Amino acid sequence: MFNLLPRDTVFFDLFEGMSGHGVGVATNLAQLAQSFPDITASIQRIREEEHAADQLAHQALNRLDRTFITPFDREDIHTLVGELDDIVDGVDALAKRFPLFHVKQMEETFVKQTGVLIKATSTVDQAVRLLRKSRKLSDLSDSLIEIHHLESVGDDNHHAAMSRLFQGGIETLEVLKWKELYDLIEDAIDGCEDVGNTLERIVLKNG
Image (cartoon, rainbow, N blue to C red; front, side):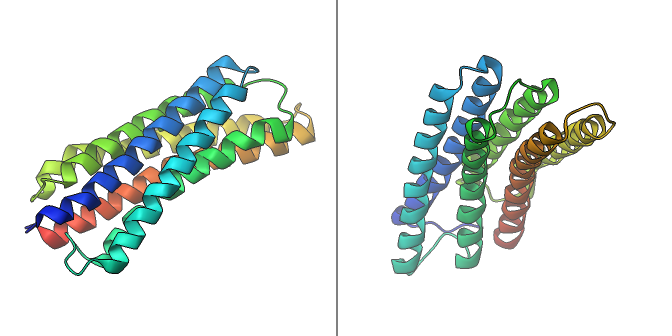
């Protein structure tokens, strides 16, 4: 059970801010995919979201360093902050690859994956917001189950994309470009599952 002092709520504000930026970068990545090749504005918005998330991560870690009483274990706070930041950083790195790789056209399965990522980050955001008041695993269970389901959907899409890329008939350079792009969005979806696992561990330890 959480025994919170008023100052502890700042950690939850920071967690929720970071998870919100996760939704933001996922939404802008989907916009990038849908508006391709007009991608400059989406890349810039993702960059801005990444900078804002980094600021929150630094604030959270600085507060962790100077706060005596925390809402749950310091190690778990550190892990949660890092995982939320990794999602945003990963999408930022992915978006930068499009101009760097001189991508010629958008892949239909990639567009589909951006939809999965939006759902996954949105569900993570919902679970993080529940963490502020949750005392039971059952309070978060629906969100955690959905995160795991979306990770499985992302895996299926990734496998289908890899099969198509390696079946032959596609230029080697295009295969290399798209393999990395698909791997990066898969990493971001997997990152959502990592956050879900951490949230589950926190609730189990503090319920």
